Each structure stands twice: as C-alpha cells, then as structure tokens.
Length: 492
Image 1 (cartoon, one colour):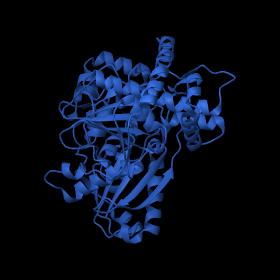
Image 2 (cartoon, one colour):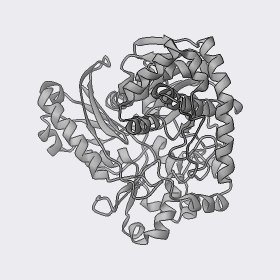
Image 3 (cartoon, helix red, strand yellow):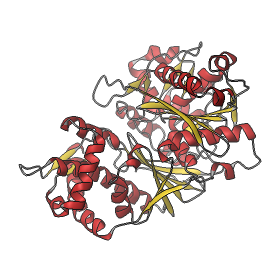
Image 4 (cartoon, helix red, strand yellow):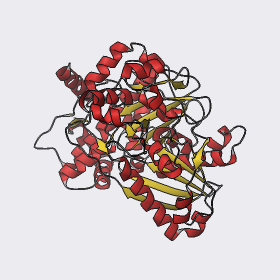
C-alpha cells in the first residue's frame, strides 16, 4: 500500500493506492493564502503539516487496514515556494509562494549579474523563483537570512517533518535558480550571485529514490506497521505528468489549477530564455520538462464567481449553454484578459494586470462566464505558441487538475491547439497519483523505473477539435490579442 500526498496552494490531498494503482482512500483539507499587499502571496509551512496530519488522521480512522499496510509515501508539492528553516528545523517565517511578485527589482539585478542564467538554470531571473526572493529578504529582512540554516521547497519541508531528513530533488531544486541544469547540481556562482550560502542548501536525491523513512512516532500515531520509505517526490507539475503516465518525450500535460501549466517532456535540456518558460528536470529519469505558465486559471474563474455571487460549476454550465443554445451571441460577449496575478509566459511581467473590453448594457451573466473561460484558454494558446515557436511540440496532450472537470475548457483547448485532448479517469488525483508512483519506485527500486512511472491510467474520454468552435475562437482571438497589446503598452 502506498500514499501519495499533494501539497497544493489551495489544499492538501492524500490518497491510498495499491500496486494496481487503484485508489482505496482519499482525504483533503483546504489551505488559505496570506496576501499582505497586492502581488504578495505567503503560507506558513506548518499549515501544510497540520493539514497533512489531519488527512492522515482521517485515513487512519476510516481506512485502518490500508494504513497499517502502508509501505511507501511520495510527495508532490506546489513549486517555487521559499521555505527557510533554522538550526532546529523550524520555519523562520512564512513561505513566499510561487505567485508572489514582489522581487521584481531583485530579478533585474540578478539578470545583470548572471546574464546566461536562462541558458543554465530553469528560467531567466523571475520574481516568482527562489533566488530573487532570497535577495529581497536579504534587502528587507536581513535577520531572516541570518537565522536561516537551510532552504527547502514546500514538499521538502513536509518530508522533513515526516522523516527528520533535509533533502530536495532536481525538479523542485531547479526553481531556486541556484541549480545548474547542465551540471544537475547546485552551483556556487549562482548562490554567490544571490547572496546565499551554498552550505545552506540541502542534499539532492532523485525523485524516485528513497529519501528517508517515516518516523516511528508517526507510524504509531497512524497505526502503520512499518517500515515506510519516503520518496524524494517532485514538484506538482512533474508529479501530474507521472500520475497520467506522461514520462516519455513529446508527451504533454496541461494542468489547470490555481494556475495553468503546459508541460511537455523533452529528451534534453531545451531552455527558452526571455519567454518565461520553465525547464526543470523531469521526475522521470534522463528527461527535462518545458513548462509554460498562465498565472491565473481557476483563480480567474473563482474571482468571477465570487463577484457574481455564484460558484465555478454554474459559470461553466452557463458558458456551455451559451455555446450550445445561442452561439451567435458569443460574438458580442466581452473579451477578458485574465492577467489577474501577473504574467510569466510569454511576457514575463509580474505587474501586468487584467483588462475587459466590449462590456455593455447587453452583457449577460452567460456572456461574462464565457469570457472568463475563453480568456484563460487564449492565454493557454499564447503558451502553446511560445513553445511551438521554439520547436517544442507534443504528440499527445492530457488535461488534468480541477479545471479538467470543466465541460467547456477542454473543448476550447482542443479547438485552439488543433489536436485531440485526452481526459483520463482519476485525472483529478493526477499529482497525488504521481507521488504514489514515485513511492512505489522508491520502495521497489527497479533497475529502470521508467516503465513503472510511464504506466497510463484508463481513458475517460477524448475531446476532438471542433471546426466551428475553432473558427469562432479564431475571430475572437484577434480581439484578445489587441487587448493584450494595450495592457503591455501600459506597463512598458
């Protein structure tokens, strides 16, 4: 029996899985985000740990036999969060998250100091990544850096609490911008440029390797017979790919969560400097991942739902109803630029914000619902085009995450991308399943773990591109691009 844990931005999920990848138990807890200023985003690491303990307590109560037989744990985690701990393994402050944009000036300074960072690390200096955040802390909270004894990523902190071991792995470590993808190791010159001590970085293991054992007192708390190996784990986007078997080159996965991330596996390190495309090592052996990001995906829909006093599923249904029953009215619907939390791919500007055009007294709830889903889909199309322009394409695209439950988004994406969209069963658990598969690999330690990691789940359905929808979106995409150019002009 294996557990897959997903430490997300909005919640923590754990699943119990057998050797046949059947989910036998699941539990979740929600998380909140602290936003002290516009563009800031923080969570306390102990909130992740408290949520994990709560879900494991629940699983131990409702699935005692399965928990007793647990032999491996894997972790998936929100990427890029800066977790600093002291000598006693306690957090020095709240973690600064992936969607925090405060370190704009520090990113600029780092680009000057390390002009070739985009060719060495996973991306050009960006305020959402580790090194600029460390520089911001050194400038504004020097006592935080002085107290810090080690830098971890979110899932690494949870693993530390599970095992007592400090460690990270390449898929996540690359997001610190202190990791050289060409050497697959932390680099002293990158650490020096960021003003952070190399000795304060954790040891590195592979995602599919053992990183420690579950502490005895935790085994006793949850009724686990033990021993339980804890795998290195992976950043959530890489874990999602493993969860749906996208562990080989040219396999693509679009994760629609708080953000939207298009990940395409590549056989080699394929950086795209200047476009906000992240290129971390994959959580499968010998590969990398090309990752373009739309910072606001389900968060944009949640924002619209809150304003309208409804919920996301109702907006989804309204958008679908408009397409099915009155598609001619879509031409007069507003156009929404969903840059609510800045932009990473392809414009690299944390200070960009959203715009809306063509609002009128004739605008209905259904038209607003359509516009927000469409706007996010158009941003996905920008990401796709950026990767295609640099020779990165995928032969197969799966959609996972909470947004994959939408009835309208997969249809829009298939029409814009021009290839069928695969929806697998259990896709809502993709990240947690990927973590569980990494736990299996750590427990069994096969000579070649790729076959295990590349196992694909059962197909739910396939969404074929619709020519009429493609034509409709093509006409409106020109309006979107004009609105985007207006927004870019305002911040340049």
